[in-house]
Image (cartoon, rainbow, N blue to C red):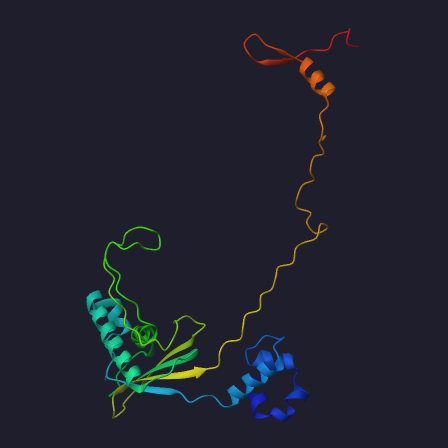
Length: 258
């Protein structure tokens, strides 16, 4: 597989070293992608858009992975998530961040000391931050029908959202990274949004139907006569005699029959 960074660093020698399919595969496009799409992806890789860095109003994360797993009550976790959502929505609207098609998210905590901390402890806060970047949702009252058609047992609170991302699945949020910088004189938490080019379209491949020669698993059909004549029906009826108890018994052949 061709390295995309090598293609960008030496574009003049790329045609001599790799084919168009290799370059398309290196930049994340299908092998049969159009030449214009490949050139656009290479240019975007050579000149990536600058990351959007937002400073959140926290000097330490409101909730960590260890607290969410052991000590923090679920009500305190909900309070911390609402605090993060309110802060993210307010900062995004104040900074007038445009809509993003695809993005890579990095959450960095600049800790004030050199204490022992795990970088993955920021994932509960990162999850709350990503949820706050998606569109808002209204409250759902108690008794409203669910997707299964049953009435809802509890009221679902309204969801806060900035709406700069359509959703938070892997097709839009390609990666989520958390990091901790120890011993910084300015303790803070920063959110970095790296815009990415739109994802290439999906190719629909129709499954090939197996031929009759390949389909050998089906048993052969039994050949039966399509039309039953009247003589055959009368012969079959005469070969059967009724039993006094209601059962049907086949008559044995006699010498007169032969």
